[in-house]
Image (cartoon, rainbow, N blue to C red):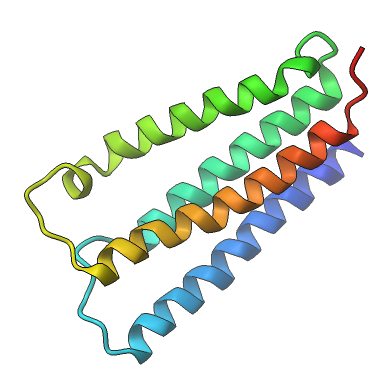
Length: 134
């Protein structure tokens, strides 16, 4: 059952990555937008992998650990801080440089964040609702 949940989550994030990146890329092509000043696929890869790891880790903790089961919410909040810090480290040349991003660049930077954050929140809330607290 746990393997099935893990594979289902992995498939969900791979499918979301493929569909949303493909749509995002095609929309940018159709609108004849100027080329982005960063790699859009790297943004999607980062958010997809990190979100999948967070959700799978919380699923494993909820199913395998009785002592940390009640702490999943705190673990999730800490993982979000870690994710934001790691994102800042990896993409500091985009975020903290003198590079001026136009509106399309800014919006394209935030779209993958909000897509995968929404999926994370839905999955974590389902995990937390399924837990019976003592």
